[in-house]
Image 1 (cartoon, rainbow, N blue to C red):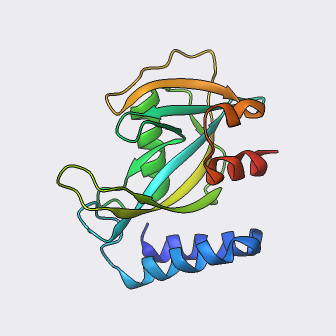
Image 2 (cartoon, rainbow, N blue to C red):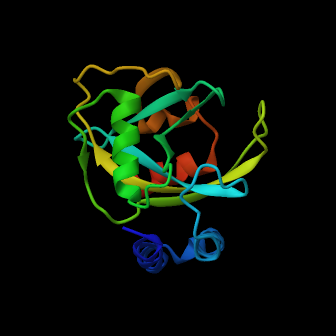
Length: 177
């Protein structure tokens, strides 16, 4: 995969979600302008891959309580130079959850988001250009909390507001329904 594949996928996403034009345009502009967009070391920002993991009934999503940011999010992380962003999302989801039952529902982008990561010890503030894919997992399978997380939880979609006020998380819930 490459920037070309990602840009084609973003174009298909645009046709499905024209109301998200502002984010789509900014995302596309970043990827077109920066060949090194998949590199974590690119200080301006970088492409990340995330997994919106639902149970088979699509009534619950798996969230991680992120250790560094102290907030609940979908699972995901840095591409570290890997332009196959679907593979990145799968790898991060497996590493952060311990789930072996994960199944990619579609290689089409489920959601796009651009968010600012605040400055932290030795790391300047930068943006994550996050590509999110839809996965299913088995809610009965044991979870394994990684060192990047404080906790993992299967959360009822109806209760997502108890865990986060992030617009992008609520947008993914709406897309699920």
